[in-house]
Figure (cartoon, one colour):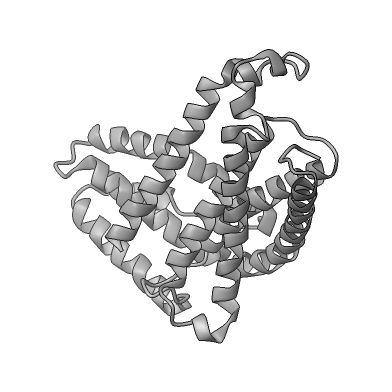
Length: 285
């Protein structure tokens, strides 16, 4: 699993590095008007039918097609034993990010005609994929990927609380910090709860820094950052338990939205490729 994570991190690093390289080196070209671009030396390289633009379009399209492999992995019984489904999902997400990025660079930020429909469908697929992944992660799971039962979730929370109690023993004020982090569902609707969780996760680095400073001022001898991490873990465990049933429902509705956009994207991508082949060019429709 560690090798997989390192390899996945290298893939994301390659995506980021290549994207930054193209954007920085081609900044002047991309910022030009469409009428001025043909006179720029980079036009033959970065335009949609240019040397680099052409191959970015091919690579991006192939990655979009490879997204279907995960779909087949989930539904074809013959593939059910072919590796950890979570690893498949991780690479599915990488393809779903890198493919659209390459396609955007392939277009040279010029969208018109039928390809505009495919492009915006692609953006919708990518953004909904990020949201779907986030909702999926809100369902507590074991190392095997199986969903945890209510009893197992409570047991994990109790384990975390016991470890915290050991770290914060004889420090009543510090132990109260646990209670202050409890995720209270209250009367929140599912959508309000989801938005609250997203905002909390965006604030997580600042929350941990604040907890670290708060506990340090109370004179604890343990590693304050470790204490802050466990406090945050306890909070996340609680909120996932509250949100589990809502997350299941949202994941079902997410599939209803995600798949049609993916189908539209693929159909118009095929149309674009066929027309480009018929006319002997990779220009945008």
